[in-house]
Image (cartoon, rainbow, N blue to C red; front, side, top):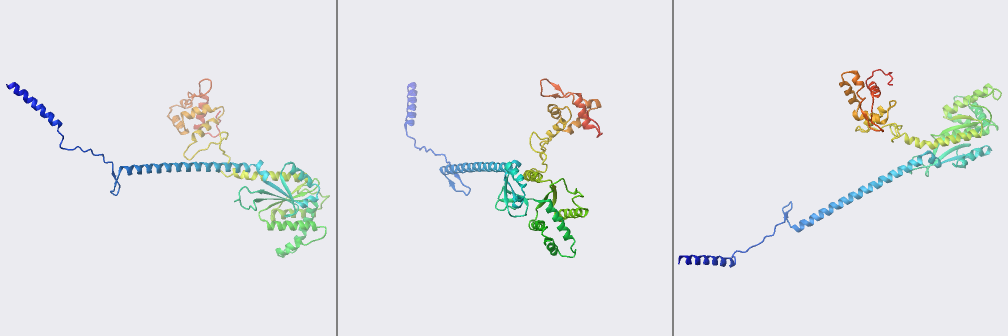
Amino acid sequence: MAVEHRANAWEISDSENESDENKPSSSSCVILEQDTSIYSADGVKISGRRRREEEQDTRKAAKERRREEKEKLKEEKLQEQQRRREAAERLNLLKPENFIKSLTAHIHAGLLRDAGCDELLRTLDGLQWRNRIENQGLPNSIRWTRQALQQTEDEAINGVIEEDQVLMVISHNEFEHMAMSHKTVTNQSMSNSMVELCCHLLAPIGDVHEGAESLLQHLSKYLTRTAGKVVTVLVMTGHQQRSGSWGEDDFDQQHLLDTEELLVHLQLDWNVAVHFLLGWQEVTDHVVALTKALSKRPYKALCGEPDLGFCMDGSWSAGVRVDRDGHGLAQVWTRQIQQMNRVSPAMAKAVTSAYPSPSLLLKAYEERPSEEERRRLLADLTVVGGAKERRVGPELAGRIHRLLTSQNPHLLLD
């Protein structure tokens, strides 16, 4: 009876649990979404969607900035390439073989009265140099102009720059008449003013000297009107004469003094040089040489701009460029060892690799107790390169030791 009651009790208990499970729960289950909202700096609540939109906008802005920076760098690179290209083109134009093509020789029409001028014209045409005949400026003169490489160049008129060199070609008789005219002027009273002196200089002395006086007049006016010009007078003697070598048969002593006075006056007062040439062939050679010298001017001026123009960059150069941070000193140390006789680049590199600076090598010498050990310090260094392994050797080691430690400036290293 007790057993049956216990079984019924368990059955009732189980049924009660089942009934309890089947009963609906009185409490409702609410699932809360995760609050992804954040707050701005001023305390305003920002929803998750808005925050995602702002993050997208921020990423887009950053991407746009990177794109703009990339475009800017690309544009700067293109501009740098363009500047280098233009600089290379200007440098190419400044080379003498190219710059001479921009020069034009202006020959005064008065020189064409002499048949020998054809020699000059044929030579210029044969060299394919530009020249033109003009009837203005200083009579019997030859001057040069060139095209301006840049619009901002100083003294450029309509894109043309006039060179400072001017030649005045005259005959020997005209030079004699100029000497006589100068003598007449110097005989005038020293108390006369400069205006009166010029009037006496330009006043005709006679029909014979009228042409020479006219040349002297034009030369004086030209030098007064154009500052900075370097005028050279070429006198064609027509026979074996040079400056200061006049013969007694052609000139008396007084005439020689008059000629020397004119030379002194032209050179000191007017800064005009005088050259005596045999004929048109030598005049032509002088014009050709001066034209070539003018063509080399810009390139030489450009090469002279650096502080050390003789130390050109390049592996073929003997110089080594050293930066302010010391980059390049190791190469200088290697070159210093390599300058010694019978020292290859590999042997010099072996020494400088073991001791990167002269001070380190001197310190190593001081640490050795004996002189013999100091001389043989570098002898066992291995030289890298070549068909077989080798050493620096005692001979080179001794020479380097003498180079760094000897106090005798006249000591021979070999």
